[in-house]
Amino acid sequence: MDESKDVPKDFIKLKSEKLSVDEVSELVISPYCGAVSLFIGTTRNNFEGKKVVHLEYEAYTSMAETEIKKICRDVRQKWPSVKHIAVHHRLGLVPITEASVIIAVSSPHRAESLEATRYCINTLKASVPIWKKELEISLNTNGLFRDSSQKKEVQILIFFKKARRGSGSEFPKI
Image 1 (tube, helix red, strand yellow):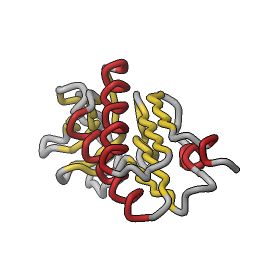
Image 2: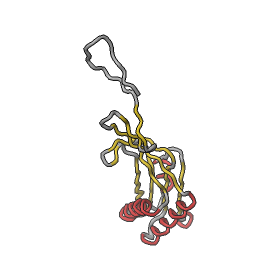
Image 3: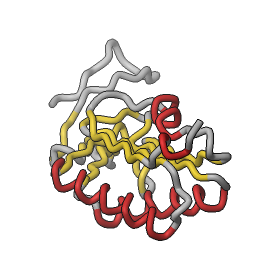
Image 4: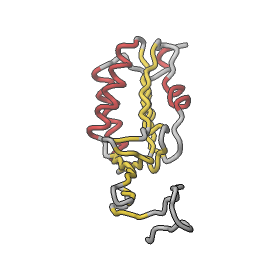
């Protein structure tokens, strides 16, 4: 295969559907490269000691795509041997354990692809207009759940068995 036919490509996608590691990694594979480096950012169930139910991402899409293209150009200047770059970012609700962002970079050798992948995620987080909101749920001492997305406290009814003296059980008033 003639290397000129395998011209460097950038694959940028912002989407609300679930991201696929296989799809993203296959985009950057090249017969001229011995390394494909991946970064997969997933939703964890906690943030600063609080329980997180899911993340929600919003973006200024056209500007985000433009900024990601700039990151790709910067990568190619810093690491000229990089062949292909893929940056896929999820928008909307992202449940726990699912990928929010997948970055894949191919190059002839591992050092360049690893360094370029780190540069991509760090620069993306610092400069691309994609905003993350954590939905945190916490129980306060009054038995109220705090829902960070609504910025209000909501009292919910929780049933639990408790040994009681007397004839029947009582339900808390809301």
